[in-house]
Figure 1: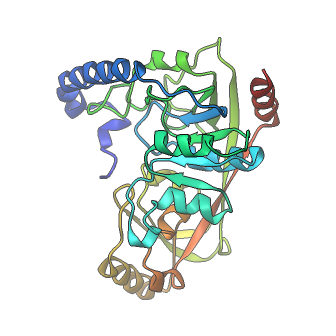
Figure 2: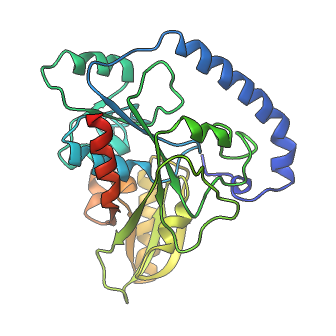
Length: 302
């Protein structure tokens, strides 16, 4: 689904949904405590990258960089598996295209299999901060500085999976820098906070006319970072599976305006094979500050 407008700014709809967020929170706490009783302890260190917002904060590019640094396999759920993504999900396909070893499905089952291997390297877990059935050796929360805590409400009144004090369970926080930080975005002072920068690498020159489209949690982030001449924008629901009709409509629109079609890497892997030669994607590069890697290595040694 598309990210609701009230997730970023409080509105009458958000306030009307607050009572439902109380029910959601109660259910989440019960599930968390129940799963904790059956916690799986891995032989190999587990480094978990999670968030307390519902999607769209840019966690997967962080996972990609850290998994490369550690030469570690990645375990993830593999959301929205389709034929176009080889039935492993768009994020998993993106990571595996970079040469990473990606294990999709039940995290616990995959961890059991990985622990049977002779390797002692760490395992990187994409998401799972709220999954108390697996013990993490290191938990890192990822935030987008421009989104912050959104409107500050729990689901479905806002984007929050947990209350803000859940940050206290993290060993560190990684913040993706933006030109402008969200209001009321304050982080705990007793937890290490590190920063990362994202850069959209355009396949076109800056004066090229493009029609940009994206089916991600917060498509406006992508649109705002395009350096080319954007003449049209089209936003689709997160993890949207494009149909031939969708692509043909976009191609006709591009032809009408004598423009190129541009999307995100995550969207591009979900396109039908025949459409990939017609559409370019912006490759997102992520640079994490060196201090984080030093902290991570010391934490793993400890």
